[in-house]
Image (cartoon, rainbow, N blue to C red):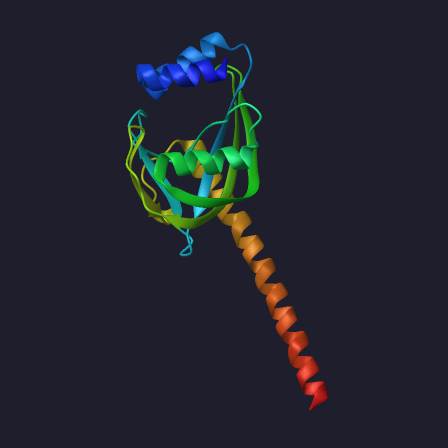
Length: 177
């Protein structure tokens, strides 16, 4: 069924909102969505400007295809919508919305590179620091804050591990001299 709908979307060029409504009507199961909090090397978060949302700016993401792993699906969605290559690093949150029949997984990851490609869903992008975020869906702001905290913990752990390796190297050097 999904392959038939994908072909119909391409031919009929429905808006994303209309596609979702039709999918929700035809499916009695949860739609599985993925959302990404993508950090660049300056610790800023990738936001995209959608053509079909009430609030212009949001986190990138989309729906999974059948048999697709969530991290692969999110990487694919971001590549398709922006032209950017990313690495999805860690699951942050899973939530459900019974009213809309949606399960959403939020991950955070790392921007690798690429050139932005405008399309019919995403017309712009920006990397923002937390204190300079535009108006976003409240859940997304909360998830971004949680991702910053988790990322800070991970980077601190990695930094401590690197310091331990350097300290061990220094001890060996001093011992041999």
